Structures are given as C-alpha cells and as structure tokens.
Length: 322
Ligand code: FAQ
Image (cartoon, rainbow, N blue to C red; front, side, top):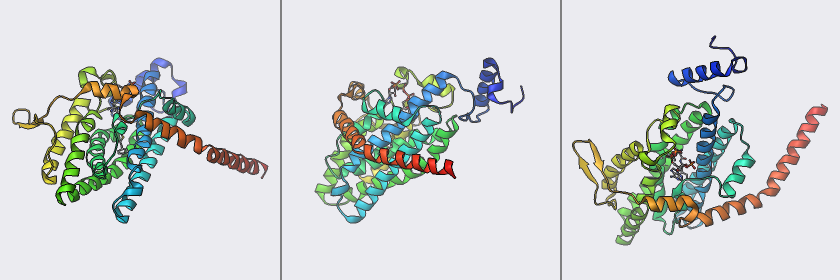
C-alpha cells in the first residue's frame, strides 16, 4: 500500500495496518488519519479531562489573587492562572480535532459526568498553598506531561510542548515561594511545612491508581499515548522532590521515605487510595464548590457567547455578500 494513499481510499483492514505502522515507527497520527474508535475515545477522554483540570485548577489558586502578599506576587499569580486558562484552551482545541464539540465537553464537566484531576478538590486556606501547588502540583504535572509531548496523537503532543515550558516556570515560582517562607520567620516556616504536609499525598495520587488497578494504562501505553506507567512516573516524582525538600528545609510527611541502594530509588509509604476514590466519586473536600463555581461562570458568560456568535454571523453574512 502506497504511504501517501489517502485514508478514505483504504479498506478498514488496510487502514488499521497503516495505523499500526505509524505507531510502531513512533510517528504521529494526525486528525485526518484513520484511527480505531477506541483510540479516538481514549484520547477524547484523556485530553478533555486534562483540559477540565487546567480550567478547574484555576479556582484554588484564583482564591489567592486578591490576597497575595505583595503586588509582585499578585502579578505573578495572575499570569500563572492565565497560563492555566491558555492550557485549557489548547487542550480543548486538541480534543475538538477528534470530533467532539466544546459545548459537549463543557456540559459533561458541569453535569459531573467528566472527570478532572483529583488534586483540585482540595482547599487552599493559606498563602503557602500557592507555593505547594507550584512546587508539588506543577512538579507532578511536569513529570506526567513531559512524556506526553511524545504522545502518538499529533495535536496533543504539540500542545503539550508549550504547556510543559510554562509548567516548568510555574514549578519554580512555587519552589521560590516555599523557599522564601521556609527561610522566613518561624510562623512562615511553620505555614510552609503545614501546607506541604497537606499537599504531599494528594500530589502523589495525581499520577492515578497503582498500575495493578489502572484499567487504561496497558492499552494507552501500547498506543504510545502514555509512555510510562502511573507508578513509574510517581517514583520519578518522589526521586525528584526528596532532594528538593532538603534544599527547602522542609520535611515530606512520610516516614517510609528512604534511599534504596538496590533499586536506585527512594522508597515511600502507602497512599490512602480510599481517599482518592472518594474524591473521584465527587466526595472530596471541595468537589461541589468547584463544580458550582464552574457552572456559575459558564452561566455568567452566556451573553459573551451570544454576542460572539452574533458578531461571527454578521461577519459571515458580509463576507458572503462581498
Ligand atoms: N484524578 O486507568 P487510569 C495540572 C481516573 S493538570 C482524577 O490510570 P489513565 C496543571 C482515570 O481518568 C493535571 N481521575 O487512567 C495545573 C480513569 O477514569 P476513567 C491533570 C483520575 O487515563 C497545575 C481511572 O481513574 N493532568 O496539574 C486520576 O490511563 C496547577 C483509572 O485510571 C492530566 O490530566 C486523577 N488524579 O491515567 C493546573 C495529564 N487518576 O476516565 C492548575 C493527562 C486517574 O476511565 C494549577 N492525563 N484517574 O473514568 C494522564 O496522564 C492520565 O489520564 C492519568 C490517568 C495519569 C491522569
């Protein structure tokens, strides 16, 4: 079969053979290429969940924009939250190339049908939480997302390249906030430690359930959407944050953490997967607040969508007439 034969001219068997060849050669599937339905569905699921996470993830941080401790911190935090909105938009656009509409994705989020990352269902009661989100949540996001730059689906992989660059900056600003607090007064140091105590385990759970309980991993890895398993990425993250916590002068709240010479990795303790499952079922500390707020913002934005649609229709009409 010629390599440049268009997908529509191939039988389903030939199209599948070409799809398998592209995956095996580590090349990219593009929107106009034939793809198995299950591959499309998996991508829509993962990319839309990822987009929702970026959008919902603006809320816990947005909580501190009006209360950031200085003008400089406020400006940095506003820029970061705007970056998250941009990430959401790139990702919704990537999902749209697979044939799902933005309205449908929004509806699925607001109705509670679609998932978003468990981590954003935790509260941010102190300023140090902005540091912990940057250091731990963005740090985990980077570990998980750098390999996604090589995802087999072109629009997803390309969106991830820019997102990862921005996440690296986010991670450093979080680290710098914690370093500043840790080296400040005793009250500031204690606030940083208390915050890290709360965010450590939820950040480790961001990588998803243990491999043995991850129904999607094997197929997603075979399709080269995911490049590493949930546990491998979690381990990579632990290995990264243990030395960083020493520089920060903060302790990770896990007594089981110790260097394992034989494995060449840090061992760490068990996580509370019951808590993770409760959060996924909508019963985490802030699930209902997050969805309520998102729905309110969507309703408040109805007039903007109507105005944009009316403007586009007028422009269209004028273009047709000229
Ligand atoms: N939260 O079989 P697996 C960020 C679900 S962005 C909620 O292992 P998979 C930036 C999973 O969907 C953070 N649900 O699933 C930022 C599946 O349910 P389903 C988001 C989770 O897809 C920073 C079920 O459990 N990042 O932080 C979670 O192979 C600061 C079984 O799991 C991404 O979305 C979870 N943590 O692996 C923004 C990265 N984990 O759908 C603002 C892209 C698992 O079958 C401020 N996504 N589930 O009903 C991925 O890499 C993957 O989708 C995983 C899950 C690794 C999240």
